[in-house]
Image (cartoon, rainbow, N blue to C red; front, top):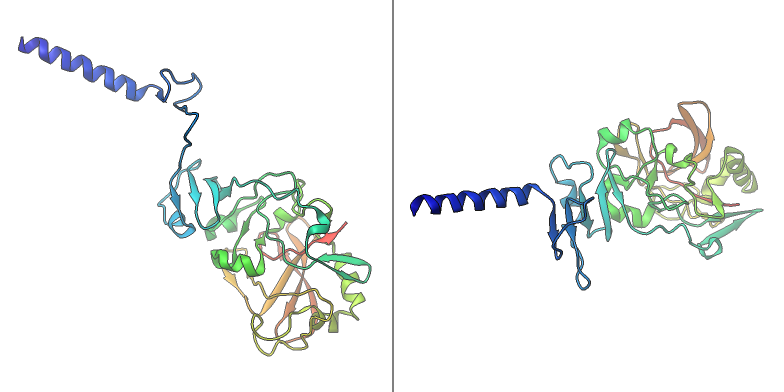
Length: 285
């Protein structure tokens, strides 16, 4: 009798082990052949772990493919090889004329920095928070300054130039990232590079570091000092510099950008390696 009891226990253990190792169906007798886990319901959904950005970033060595719901950004996210990617529905269908704009001469500019997580075709742009991953990225990526979403609400996102140049389109339909020539048209319209900066900067020292020389925002451009992310992944210059990519590259490694400075009225142009992270301001097609 005792031997029979142990045999039954052994058989049960084998069945349980087999079921654990095989496909699992919840709410269904047999899982779909293509699924390791098949959850079926007509009245309830599936809830992934919910956490803030800070809690997400505290996960030790997250595996590629890991899925969470980010309560900070209110979006479903998965871990890719380069960073966390949002699965929130794309905003690429925004009507161009419904966006806040300002007419400066013959050009119509967005009145705010770009703050999208998606390319024009709806594909997600990876968010990269880790400095090492940012420095080694060779495809489009974005981040918040200092990885703080609160900065995104004020200054928009920072993008590397690979996102600017991606054929899927960083700007919404009807818009584009301005070329070097188009930036020059703007500064010429505003009286030249030596005075245009003051006309483009938001006045006062609430956002800009004192003295915010010459700032009047008479153009309506509403330039803010969103800072930068260096090619090594470190953040800097918030409050002191507003920096925007152009879509014009100089060669295979560097591209042109424009920037405003807290202590001068000028608009400057310079070159940066493409892994740098700058703001983006879009121009109407």
